[in-house]
Length: 142
Image 1 (cartoon, helix red, strand yellow):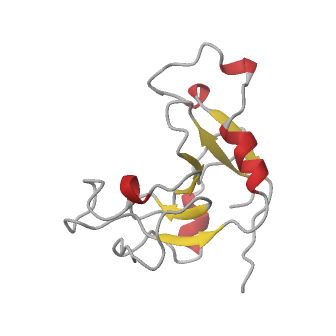
Image 2 (cartoon, helix red, strand yellow; image 1 turned 30 degrees about the horizontal axis):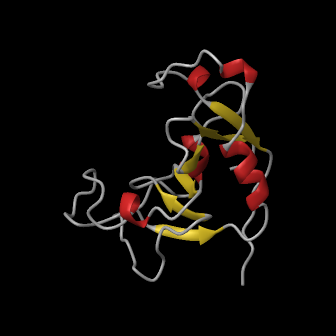
């Protein structure tokens, strides 16, 4: 996820999403995931033990795109809430939780970027989003 981006639109403040594209050029980075053997989840398996609480990370469908929940989104992303899953009643799986930096996520979520004052209400290009660079990312194990 190094040198990729987080993005969000004021119409969707319930999440801050991460996209596997190169920051600045928006070229896909899917080849990096494929080289590591990751082409997405085999199936989306939601667990009630890991609900979509504030600052949890969930896969968007089968991934690799993921999002950070900025509030409790169990009703929006939990079982049966979205129709893109192949198994009826399934939900986006959560796989991690932000343990430090929640204030930064809130700043991204509530940014008032002058560059986007005239943004499209229904996003159609990267210019319609507030974007932040993911300089580097790593896993902290409990």
